Amino acid sequence: MNISLLNRSAVWAGLLGACALLPGFSAPAPKPTAPRSRTFVLTTQATVPAPPTGTKTLDVWLPVPHSDASQDVRNLKIESPVPYKIENGAYGNQMLHLQPAAASTGPLVVKLTAQITRREHLNLSANGPASAGKAAKKEKPDPNMARWLMPDRLVPLDPKIKQLAEEVVTKANAKTDLEKARAIYEHVVSTVTYDKTGQGWGRGDIYYACDARRGNCTDFHAIVIGYCRAVGIPARFSIGLPLPTKRGKGEIKGYHCWAEFYTTETGWVPVDASEAAKNPAKRNYFFGAHDENRVEFTRGRDVELAPKQAGPPLNYFVYPYAEADGKPLEVARTYEFADVTAQ
Image (cartoon, rainbow, N blue to C red):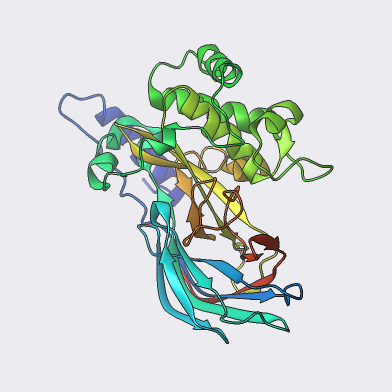
């Protein structure tokens, strides 16, 4: 009998389905897909204006992308007219610090260039029990675990937030930490709109986000992180830059942030609720994945710089920051990328 390729595939699928009913038979497990990666050159330029006349001390900090399990940073080059130091901050963050010996009478331009390979961050156990436990065993313990259960200035863990979080997990009948985190993620993606109009968005203020039900990535993840912490699930915040999915080169106009939560069964699970809201077809993907089209600068909120700034902790640290005699000074910045390989 002559069977077409299409019919042949259908027959084979039917035979596999029938065999699966036989005792002792197990179909071959699908091979896991290797994480995608992207290599590019990132160029950061900060232009610090001349400080006010009479300024005695000028301090400038720039976030420096660091290597970790999801990204490699190589060939870091720094161009600065004044001496600088690369300092280590909390949570593995790195930053460039400059303090000119004499206050400049003109703009201070600092340029950072690095080749970065960013890998897709996948945790397959987030969407099924098959790999549960494996991811957690591979990871190094996070020494800041207690911090990821604590509030941030704009993400308090007061009785109202705890009540809202409990309502979400109860409505979903979620029992395990993984089920609770999934319920919170689905709730945020379903009820918050990605909308950067008006005022109030972009600060990661959980009360603004809960009331307005709109905002950008910081607002989405304020709810995700706040609700997870409120029900006892450690959750952490990361911020950096997004890259367009199309390979090439160009300027990066704004920042992007994302989150992770932790369970003993899964280890750290990456989530990106704002990208899921913008791309409904990837809603399931972004629970358990961060794509390779990004670069992380820093982790955590309420950031104290190294050396410590005179002003209050930064809400988040993704752009250059400067102080003239302890008072904030606006810094202009540009970011450009150029893909090296497309994988």
